[in-house]
Length: 187
Image (tube, rainbow, N blue to C red; front, side):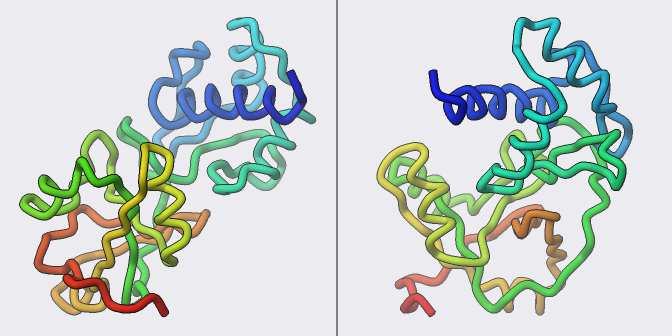
């Protein structure tokens, strides 16, 4: 197995631990989602995974979604968003761009068109600032479909938006009336 493939596999486990199930590595997260790096590394090694600080730093640095962050002295690490467990990652409210994009697949469209975009098991709905990123998100589960959202109207109507450390826009819910239909041209 190549180093890249090993890192991807370790990164998936890291995502599970830091976003959904810290006990999978025998650790706990603090109220803001931070894990002690030494405890995390020890916990991952106890599960049979080969990882050291250099590998962890490489995974964080090279993750194309910038999914993780270290504190200033690299003694703590957390996922930037996407948690299914209650943590406060200290998101900052922000003014979204005029349009945001949500990547999904065709089989979910009837439900989304009727019920809107819901957070499901996560703390927030995840939205992308550009069409291509949303398309890539949808592609993970099949042929992608991108829903274009009138974020400007949502914000004007008082809906709060947050911008995660890695550039993902977050909100509680997107009602169908904020979908562009038909979709406007990509800017």
